[in-house]
Image (cartoon, rainbow, N blue to C red; front, side):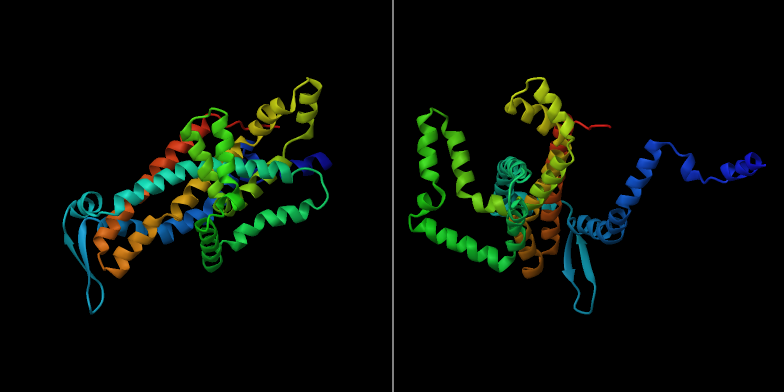
Length: 308
């Protein structure tokens, strides 16, 4: 009798229990993305379509309400790319700074996370200190610290504050090329900005490091691997998915902080040239998508996903 009663219960199991593990994982992935998808379609898609539409029109605000759109073809794009004297230089400057700062932020964040993942006294306080720049990165406070840093550098105190000139002379004495020296010099001079942009990445890397199985390090030690080899063949490999995530996040974050955003806002809302501002926005968004897509394709090839 007990066997017969168990059969109907087995037949009543729902469709979810009959799914394979990969399908369950995919289902929960969709559920996890559902709030973002709803926000995209309800709040982002319509303004994006309107932005593309405005970019091909001369848009005027009607005093009684609404807007009037006069088709102008590609005139707004011609104005943005060929006539405006500030837009293209700011695009190039944004792209250059983003490509230069992103590796610095990723490397700095990973090294800080490795240090904070060590077993030492006060590591909770140390982790909190590295998260402070995110709290500090508010408008007035960030502007005040930047101005103070600029004043100190203007007074000739940059070497005392950052040690940039000393580092440059040391590297030059090693026979390293001027381009690399200038790149490292810029990194030292912008250390405060790098630290202020690395808080989220440090937390992500810290969580990834804590998820690495200690048995992997034990095996590496038994096999006679040095600390250098363990870092590259265990640590970096195991956190490579988070390197991918942090790189995409950093690129998007740096693009969002670009001066191009302020320029587009000024042209669109202060000068009431909405069609031109929309064209500039479309070009900027397209550049973001292209750069982030290329970075994703390149990094994805070397990402390692560990399956238990």
